[in-house]
Image 1 (cartoon, one colour):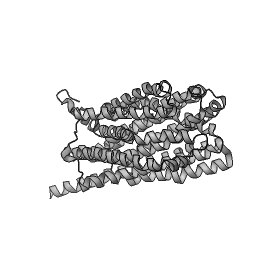
Image 2 (cartoon, rainbow, N blue to C red; image 1 turned 90 degrees about the horizontal axis):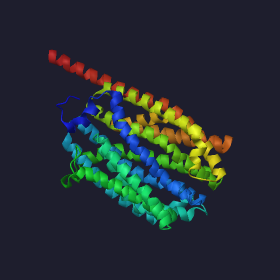
Image 3 (tube, one colour; image 1 turned 60 degrees about the horizontal axis):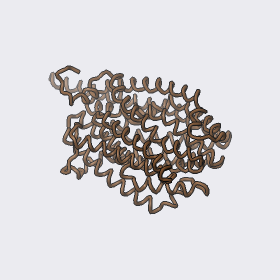
Image 4 (cartoon, helix red, strand yellow; image 1 turned 45 degrees about the vertical axis):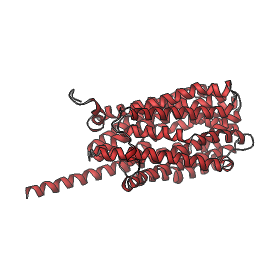
Length: 466
């Protein structure tokens, strides 16, 4: 970028002109750093509850996790839909519509949070039973889920507002919210769990307060004018066009997360048949695996506004270059993480439980599930790119095939023929197949757009000559 360019245009420059590898790294690495902190957020409750040496409370946190995923799914509906539209508007240089979309997205998030909290609390016992909680874990799961539902506004606001910041290229600002919320959770967990003797309820309260602080930080950046876009009360009512655009992309994104939650619940129900300690071991392994998951999610989320901006600007060659750079970076990084997990699996599981059976089970689970890492990043990047392009049907199709036509059937088939450890291999097999399918679909779509644009330009040139 030349020295005379305005400082506030740096974010636009990265999305439009920066070298592809550098653009992917610039947008992705800050997010990954923030998501590493988010790993601590997810592991904090597990760690401090583990210090209580109560494996049933440990299992309850894992059983309650789908409620967080549902909350994120509703956040994703607004965050993904609005972010996709904002990035495309910026690419087309329509800042007025981008600001209107931002404000509408915030208002819709508040409405959704109250809806989720109210409905969830009204049907709390049935919800907890549906999550797979049994006699030893029911009450603990109920306590944790109630508080998570009561604080839905903070959880959903933190997640959605961070997405909205990233849509305009303000990645670092979204990371500040993640960091603030996570450190608050780390500090508050031991206070509520041990000092105030609240156990699992204290862990849930600390989680909600941490999310509340993260949401407040995002709002502070908007309120102080540090962002490219700013919300306005005069724009709080969305137009029909903006609503259609948000929900056209957002509803499939929500269904994707809900499908993932459903698959997660099915996985837990199958695991419960092998004992509740198996659920605890799986929960620890899956949360450690989230370290690797956040790496590919960070790169995919960082690439999303790059793809959306350049799609809006009709720069299809740059989209292909960004995709290639993103795939190379994320696959190489995940291979390194996989090797680390393989070597230190028992030590990592041992941080969260001193039970020998849990450590042995968790180590084997981690060493199996880590095999998804070199492949799943490509799937996530392809899916988010389709969302960024305003083509949610393709993104949802990837998730539908991935979860219900491959993963869930393979769970039952492998569980039936090979037992628990066979069941674990359902996910790596699924991700290998989906990597080939999803990347192939995305490359084909971008090439079609490129050739259509070339044909239009050729037609305009011929008319000008005539």
